[in-house]
Image (cartoon, rainbow, N blue to C red; front, side, top):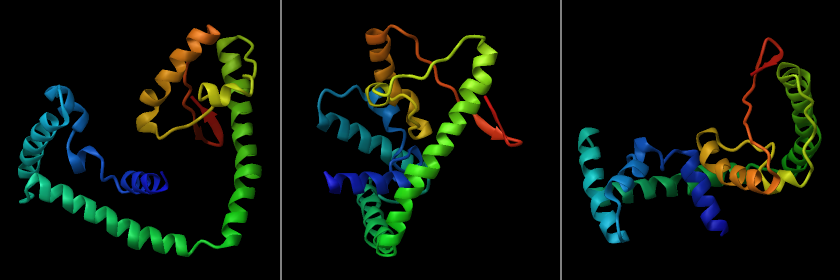
Amino acid sequence: MPKEWILNMATNRWGLNKKESVGPVALWIRECDPKNVEEWRTFYYKRLGEFLQRKGINLSSSEYLTDLGRKLYVKISEVMKSEIENITEEDCVNYIYELVIKRTFEGYRTEIETIYGQLQNILEVEIKPAPDKWDRLYNYEQTPEIYKWKEWLSRTHERFEKEVGGKVFIIFSLKRDKKRKF
């Protein structure tokens, strides 16, 4: 599991799994509708080859994926290793204090100013704090990577609606001119 986590984190960090790197795999697999992994591999290699040609990359699909894997290895073995070696015990202690004290406080103040300070007035309804257990059960007040939020939250939001009976909505806010805006 730790190895998988590191590989996943590095792949995401450097975008090696993005459409620009590996093609629109979500679209392609739906087009293929494969019955087994070999059918998918054949279809993917064909599409990736066409994709690489359009980008002017003169490698076979297999060579290209091997090259991406080697790039990932360099990022992990050189870049991340160097970054990890530069982290001190003091950095870790300071980070925990920053996370638990400062960032928790800032998040709380943002919630107060945004939800209770503005949204409650706009909607003209009383908004009550959610029970603490909802944080983990229904991903309440969590902020995933923005491009994955809909997929990531939809399952727990459906479960919330069935189990609790309430509707779920998501609020995006930005800080402009020292004030939160929706």
